[in-house]
Picture 1 (tube, helix red, strand yellow):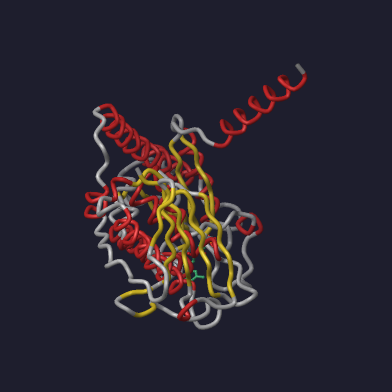
Picture 2 (cartoon, rainbow, N blue to C red):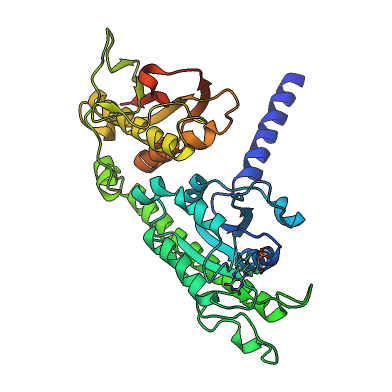
Length: 386
Ligand SMILES: Cc1cc2nc3c(=O)[nH]c(=O)nc-3n(C[C@H](O)[C@H](O)[C@H](O)COP(=O)(O)O)c2cc1C
C-alpha cells in the first residue's frame, strides 16, 4: 500500500513538473538586447510587459554577450541571462533592442548576428516575426539605426513588425519623444527622466503588436499541422530538405576495415567527421587554431555527412526515420575550452530542422585531446528507422 502511494506521488510530481516547464499552447517571445547603461533595458521591460499582456503569451528577456568581456555593464543588465545565436529558432517571435551607436546598431549586437550564418543558410528564422526598438542619446540617426537592423532581419527572411502610429494618441508633445513608425526609441534626458512615459507606452504597444503577430502565425502553423495530422499525410523529408536548400553530400566512404553504418534492431549506428569534398573542413583545435564559428561550420558539415550516410542506411528514403535517438559530439579542444554545447547545437538544430519532432534527441558532448585526421569534431549518431 505504502509502495503504491509512493508510486502515485512520484507520478503526480512528474506530472506537475512537466506542466510547470512546458505549456505547449503558450506563445513564446524573446526580448533580446544589448545595453551598456540600461536605457535599452528599460525599454525592453516595457516591451516584455506588452508581450505578456497579450493572452497566452510569455516573454523571456535576455542579452547578447559583450564583445569586450571586461566592459562595465549596468547592474541589472549584467544579471540578464545571455542568449546563444542557436536558440533564436526556439521562439515564436523576437523583439531586438540595441542602443543607437553612430546611427547604427551596437557592434555587440552586430557581432552576435555575424555568428548566424548556419541559421541564415538553413533559413531557420524565415517567417518568424521580429521587431526592433532602440535607446538613443540625442536621437540622431535613430531611424537609420532601426532600418539598418531591419536589413539583418530581412536577410534572415523574418516578418518585420513596425509600429506605424501606435502610441501617438497619448504622446506628450510638449517634449521631444523617440516615436518612429519603425519602432520605439528613447532619447536621453537628465538622469532618470528617460525613457519618458510616452516612449515606454509606445514600447508596450510594440510588444503587444509583436505578440499578436507571433501568436497569429503560431496558431496558423498549429492549424496547418493539425490538418496534416488529421489527413494522416506523412511529412516528406525530401521536401523539407528542398524547402530549406539543404543539399546532402555524397556519403563519405570508409578508410579502414569498417562500414559507414550498422543496423541492429531497427537502430542505425553512424560515426562521421567534418569531411567535405574529400578534405577536412576547418581542421585543428578549437580554442587555439579553430574559432567557434569555424567549429560550428565543421559540426554542421559533420551532421550533413551523418544524414547522408543515414539516407543510405534507409535505402535512399529518409522518410523511414522514426527518431533521432542520440547524438554524441566529440570536439578537438584545448583543455580549458567549455563551449561544447554551443558548437553541438549546429548539429542538433539541423536534426530538428530536417526531422521535426522526430529529430529531438538525447545528447552528449565531450572535449578530446585529438581527433582522426585533425578534424575539429566527430559525431556519433543513433537513429531508429522503420
Ligand atoms: C559609441 C557610441 C555611439 C553613439 N552614437 C549615437 C548616435 O549616433 N545617435 C544617438 O542618438 N546616440 C548615440 N549614442 C548614445 C547612445 O545611443 C545612448 O547613450 C543610449 O541610450 C545608450 O543605450 P544603453 O543605455 O542601453 O547602453 C552613442 C553612444 C556611444 C557609446
